[in-house]
Structures are given as C-alpha cells and as structure tokens.
Length: 322
Image 1: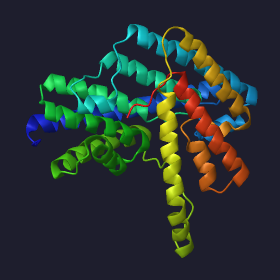
Image 2 (image 1 turned 120 degrees about the horizontal axis):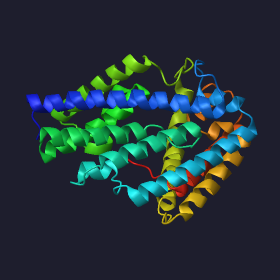
Image 3 (image 1 turned 180 degrees about the vertical axis):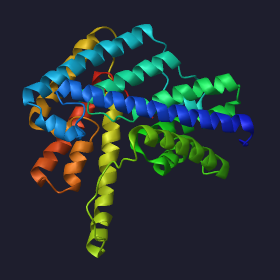
C-alpha cells in the first residue's frame, strides 16, 4: 500500500502540473487546427458544432479526406519507426513502460485528427501524454512498482480532468476504471493529482463548462422514463463495445493502411455532408439533443451516422486507449 511521504507527494504535484500543461497545450492546438481547417477566425469563440455547420459540405468532405491521409501516413510511420505503443490500461496493470516519444507523437496525431473532424474523443490524447510524463517522473524519482501503478493511473485521469474541467469525475474514472479500488490513500492521491491539473488548466483555459443544460424538473414521469430507458442504453453500450472490439482487430500492416484510412475517412466526410454534427468528439450532436433542437428522425440519423463513423475511424487505424 502507498504512503504519503515527500518524494511521493512531489511526484503527485509534478504529474498534476504536467497533466494540466498538457491539457492546456492540446486544447490550444485543437482550436488552432479547427480554425485553420474550417476557415474560422481564431479570435472567434464558437463551438465546433457551429464551425462545421457553417462550413460548406464540400469543405467538410475535403477536410476529412485530408484527415484520412494525415492519419494513415502518421499511423503507418508510428508503426514502422516508433517504439511499440502501450495502452494506458496495460501500463497500469503490468510492468510495460509507455514509450515517451512515440506516445507523445501519437497523442499529437490524435488531437490534430480530432480537430480536423475525426469522430473520436479528444480525451485520449491528454490522457496518453500525461501518462507518458508520469512514467518519466516515476523513473526520475525511482519510485516503487506499486507507486508507479498508482501514479500512471492518476496521471491519465488528471489529463482527462484538464481538458474537460472535471476533477471529481476524473477521480471516479481513476478509481473505477483503472485502479478498481476506493482505498482512502488512493482516493487522496487521485484528488491531489486531478486538483492540481484542473487548477493549471483553469489558469490556461478558464473555468469552462462543457454543457449548458436547460432547467429540468425531475418528476415521477421522468423517473419512470429513466427506469425504462436504462436497460436499452445498457444494451446499446454493450453492442457498441462489441462492434468496437471486432473492428479494432482489423489488420493494419503495410502501407495499404494509408489507402484504407483515406477511404474510411472519405466515407465519414460523405456522411458529414448531410450530418455535420457527427464530426468531432460527439459534443455537437449531444448539444442538439440537450436543447431539443432536433426531431426524432434527425436524432436517429445522427445516432446511426455517429456509430458508423466511429467504427470507420477505428478500422482506419486509431485504437481506443483506456
């Protein structure tokens, strides 16, 4: 079991700072690329949904074709020239180390492609980068295997906290998804790391709110609907995960993956000509749903389009990194 002594506390503070700075840098990079790709003045503070909706359909298609080319070449080069990538989950649960340079390059490639319209989440890049920095901190301070296990998980969660401004949710992510424990010292370590990270990100990005929700009256009808919807949502999540597992096993060997990436992202671009909200990490479609701005037909089309686009992006070469 871990204990809080000066060197371990120093590691938590350093990892929190590095995770926060990573989140700030990657968020800035995300916005810069979005503005350049879709022709928006960088001074304008508008959501990605508005950016892609205002872009012409042909511009969205060209952006996704370029995204596919960049992604395909980038992933091919990483596999040919870089050290083998290690998932965060594997790094936490085994002694396999995260390769610093390759992981950072992969994170940068992820955030750039998401900015160009890849339908995957933007949280993977800061989690990977923060976890890679955590690995280096552990090595420099010569900490134990148990401490490494805790610190890499905390670093990954702190990266998530930095980009979404969600310290408590990130603590739950660390404890429930990576460490599977609620021991008080582990909770304390996660709180320190995520708290420092969010403090840094609020200094660099401001105290932002991801979603502005309308006022909601919780009554018996709402609770009854939630009770009925829960099982269907769970089944949907299970089927989505099964599909993702199958698609992620598609062979990605040789330069043919470049062509596959261009084709997959080209299909996503075609879908985005009519469904622009499928682009990016899902926030665009979610905002429309929260505001009740769309009917059930368009919502169903967005659901199907987003599902298909995520599968295509995964088949093209990018792998989830929990």
